[in-house]
Every structure is written in C-alpha cells, then in structure tokens.
Image (cartoon, rainbow, N blue to C red; front, top):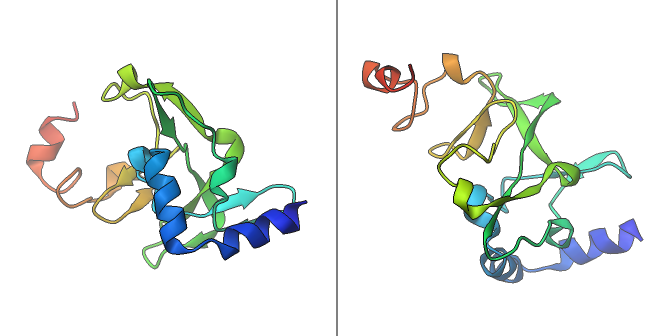
Amino acid sequence: GDAEATRRVLAQTKEERQRIIAERRLAIDFFDDDLDECYYAEEDKYGKCDLDRFPRCGNNELICYNRTNRRDRFYSDWNPRFFINYHRILCYPASWEGWGGCSSCSPGRYCKQEKRCILDEAQYCCPGEWGCDTEDEEYEE
C-alpha cells in the first residue's frame, strides 16, 4: 500500500534517484529532488516525491509539474512554498517548448536562480531573469 511505497521512496539512494531523473528526463521542467516536495492526498501530507508516480512522457513530450502554492508554509520573505500534486503533472508536446505551454508554477513563475516559485512575480526581482531592472520591463509589454 501507501506505506510500502513511502518506505521504497525513502530507501532509494540519491544516486538511484538521480539516475531515474536523468533516464526519464524529469529535470526538463526544473525538478530538484532535494527541494521539491509532493502532496500525498490519500495521506494528506507532503513529502519526498515518488518518481514512479510521475507520468511517463513519450519521446516527443516534455514533463510539466504545474506546482501550486501552499497556504501553510512560507519562506522568510513571505513567498509561499510550492508543491507538486501528482494529479497536476502533465506531458506536453515537445513542440510547445518556448511557447509557454508548460507552467512550472501555477500561479506564479519559476526563478531558476533561486530554485523556487515566486507567487507575485510582478513585485519580485529574480536576478538575471526578470523584474530587476528597466531592461527586463521593456520585454514584458
């Protein structure tokens, strides 16, 4: 059952998990095994993601996690922590890459520099990506 799956996930070594992530191209949409957490609805808890529960995308597809914000945990700057809900993970056609087909954070925007989702992107500076200077603002018309 669920307890057995949880034990299996916790027993996996970091190397095993990194191999699975690489083989299945799970990092295409900014997946960080050390930072990301998943929601287990049947147990109403958050924890380390069970990679076997992620969909297996085809060769012409890319995985998209569609993280959503928590309402009970926040960073020190009051941005909420985000989580992955297994039911919201989708495979998108690879041809959509760059067209905005995948939303790493919904609502919000993924800040690669900080390896986290930012809920109110309009009021936030993600260094080297968006919101930090007037040059960024020119492109966001």
